[in-house]
Length: 146
Image (cartoon, one colour):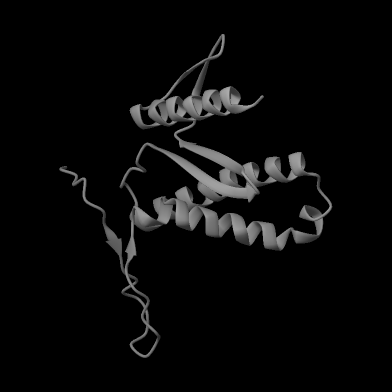
């Protein structure tokens, strides 16, 4: 069986003729940062009453947990829609304004990084590149602080 590296689309052919037709779903877009952040936003909205009572650290942890959950759910939806089309290895970095000069950085990895112990991890080339970028940003931020 030969597989293409191009994205695939899924159409629901079982929909009645008079039902509104949705645009085709791009298999790679389903797992992209825009969709994941939309899912995180929905989880934050759904859990707003808890989220508002959290301190900043708890909020950051909740957002990271929700990103992981959203990624897992969307990966399952991807598998259901596209069957054997493998999920691409990826590293997603999200930069958010945190107020003033602060920037919040979030990272998500598929598949998860493998902890090798002693502060070492194993990952795909994209993941290692993302980690290197994050370490560079962290070093830069530490040098700028008085």
